[in-house]
Amino acid sequence: MTFSRCLPLLLALLVFAGCAKGAPEDKARAQGGAASRGSSFVTGSIGEPSNLIPILSADSASSDVAGLVYNGLVRYDKNLKLEGDLAQSWEVSPDGLGITFHLRRGVKWHDGHDFTSRDVLYTYKVTIDPKTPTAYAEDFKQVQTAEAVDTYTFKVRYAKPFAPALASWGMPVLPAHLLEGKDITKSPLSRKPVGTGPYIFKEWVPGQRLILEANPHYYEGAPHLSPYVYRIIPDNSTMYMELKAGGIDMMGLSPVQYQRQTGSREFLSRFNKYRYPASAYTYLGYNLRLPMFQDVRVRRALTCAINKEEIIQGVLLGMGQIAHGPYKPGTWAWKPKIEADPGYDPARAAALLKEAGYVMGSDGILVKDGKPLSFTIMTNQGNDQRLKCAQIIQRRLKRVGIDVKIRVMEWASFLTNFIDKGRFEAVLLGWTISQDPDLYDVWHSSKTGPKELNFIGYKNPDLDRLIVEGRGTFDMGKRRESYYRIQEILAQDQPYTFLYVPDALPVVASRIKGIEPAPAGISYNLIKWYVEQ
Image (tube, rainbow, N blue to C red; front, side, top):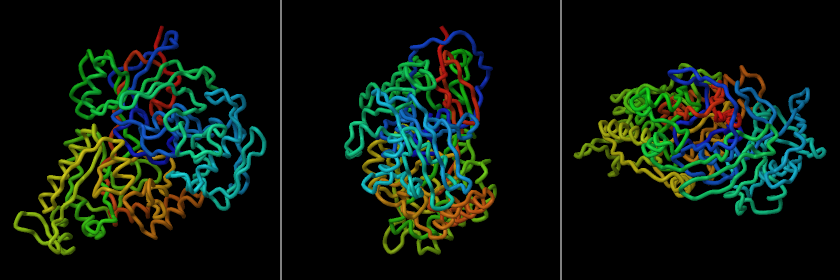
């Protein structure tokens, strides 16, 4: 239920429960019986949402909740094909530059007001407003004209071809009657959202839980599971204990939990496990505003010194793949062989650092101009995978003379006080990956400002040009060529050390029926999940 195109990449807290294809492990899922309405459903998250106005947040916790409260004009179906959501239908002009949306009639905001084209026009305008601190304006800035033709018709036209145009209208639509003419950054909707979606916001107890209730007037029918409780449990081990005790119905397992703690007959009688490649990757990102990371030889040396396979085997227990760039293996924009990608080679790392002017100090730490090569990796609390990954990186870098410290931060504070303000040296984080391969928001040099997604400050004119070329044509072959070249540039520059694409490992209580694994994962039809009477 996350809006994966409108927020093209989300800061990932953990492996996600339900964002790609998968099948339940160990047993077939027998469905049948009458659905019981009013059955509660509790899911766990290590992070707390930062803001429930979707254009003002970039974290997966916020997306998880907002994706149940709001709708966009379009969405991805179970086979990852675009279909109508608040738009019942649309036409694309013969030149590909215009889209006319015919909006669904009879849809109500959760406060009873009618949904109309005014809401869509407002959402477009507030997103591109320079006063709105959003990371997602760029797609809508490609629009030349936007018009609410009548109450249920909305029309846009682009000045030039823009490949993600239709998908970009998956952006959640905001209520104009509550926000128009007001400062969106001060709106109470950030904590008490009002949407058109399948669930109505009811309560947020900070640090504990959010509660949503089924929308009885939802255009697809009210969800069977209600209330929907989103529990905030900052530690994955504690969350697992809550799962076994019946305190939650769904979570993302760690590899150790999946392989070594959930195989008993008793556990598998109570829960269903899933495993599939996540639409996400984990990376070590460097603050390129700092002198130590501005030398590409240092960044390449860091990657050469890190054994990614060791991380996959030691941390993921083999349940993941090496990442060489920002795309999921097997997708159409992913380049199978990247020539410039440095493999694990500690000797090469040492040589590059020597070329960069570093000499070994008496304490075993490299020094240049009297300054040791030392930095801190920051990551989020509650994610044992990332902490263990950081510890392996720390040991490997120590072997080539680099001193690394590790700092673990509570998620909301990490985002607000460090990421958004550029107060970090290196970060171990992850991105979810959208269905469209456009990389503008994370990698274009114009997106390095406060609260934007290129927070490491990477700038490369050649990459900028290729990103614009890739989104500026409808020809998939030409787009693929641009994205292949982008992956080579990123491999050469190493602004990130791309680490791995993990497997998603969701687990759901077996009392929950109606789950139908598909290319879109398991959560795409959450409103159809039910408990038998």
